[in-house]
Image 1 (cartoon, rainbow, N blue to C red):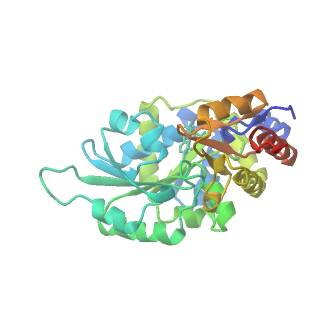
Image 2: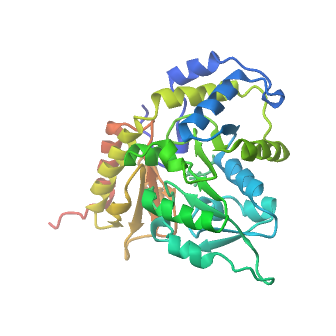
Length: 349
Ligand code: TLP
């Protein structure tokens, strides 16, 4: 491993030797013709894992979210989400641009909405107002710091959704992390949702790919929309093989990433420059706030980069660190010693 310690995201991993071999050995065909056997295998496996009728391979989590929104909703309707979710912050306004949807972004501590809040936000049947057509949750919650949605909260939100006949979609980019950390199976986490996906390209270590799952009717509609969005792909068995390999070899090891994130968070919390909500460090993400009067996040990011530690900016005074397959215990120890070297108060002589 090089001396570079890249904690910007779990998306930066490169395929392992074993994954590369599985990719090279894949049986492939043209998936637009429905002839890629490995893609079909992956889709069936994910559908089964999530307890849904059908799965569909996508190039990205963003496209899963956007297609799911467009599949569920009528243009002019409103979707409820939380203010910090990926769909609201990092998908270029795609929900309104591509789906014709208005997002109503609610405040939610650490990204976790409550059933009461959702119930309150559902629009009455009034000619002046958009209809509430979809509810969007994110688990784990990225800007919440990798927080896990409590199952009881999801169940209560799903009750409200069902009662009002509003579909529920899960941005589960990192839901496999939530499953490993919480002990709830992927199918248990997915059960209350009408549609759900997870990314293969994050903690699971694949170069590309996300799989969306739902009822056969929903996935058939999503497949047409995926084609319209330019996501009909050809010999994707090479990528699907990476996904199958990851499901066999990279799920249980996510616990390692979670353990390392905790070690990192506890070490940084001891430095007075950083404030960390340790209760939110539940999976592989650490959010560290720079405490005034210290310098801003951009200069911390630059100082760390000079020493070979790479982090993301998550606000003017906030950095994000993500643990993953390409950072081992040694890398975490090195990162911690660089943080200490830069930010421990110098001893008074
Ligand atoms: N998140 C990326 C960045 O876009 C912020 C990251 O480094 O964490 N949902 C969630 C919760 C995500 O965190 C991401 C990616 C996506 C969707 C989008 O997935 P991709 O990048 O595959 O389109």
